[in-house]
Length: 118
Image 1: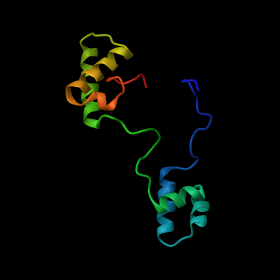
Image 2 (image 1 turned 120 degrees about the horizontal axis):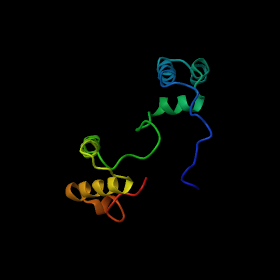
Image 3 (image 1 turned 90 degrees about the vertical axis):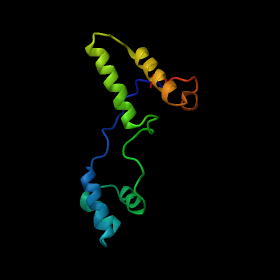
């Protein structure tokens, strides 16, 4: 599969608010089918959210870094940009690799000790 894959669909045709309203209505005693039709949310989606809310929101895997670590790296990159340093993708990977080797066991997180291009 090529790396420049473009999704053919634009995502769900319902909003998060519609889903929350449908789940709330089912928890208040309504039938799943009726709530899904009323709020235009797929029946199976409502059922899945009523039984157990998913543990994560959105697509993709979880990040190796915490939000604070990511913010720290972003601030450092912005500072380097303001100082006039130009960098590309490889430079960013090397900066993240340096951060990981200084603060974490990078060998445990990545096969060759540094993150890939994705």
